[in-house]
Image (cartoon, rainbow, N blue to C red; front, side):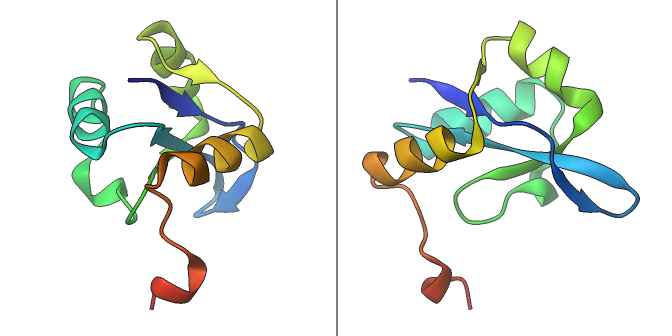
Length: 88
């Protein structure tokens, strides 16, 4: 499994956010997120939203830092991507 994290460029709630995804398995993504203190409420169907201050810790724990386009490309290729039309 590879856990990927992109750059924190998404503003919300007075801070910047990144996305944490797996390119193979959601169960392993959930285990990684739990081990790194990412709250379960941060999960949004196929990714976790993580605040910018967590980026260094996630990378040190083994997340691969990639650009946003690469993250989406690999998420789609994994078959785990939930399309916008299905997000309700």
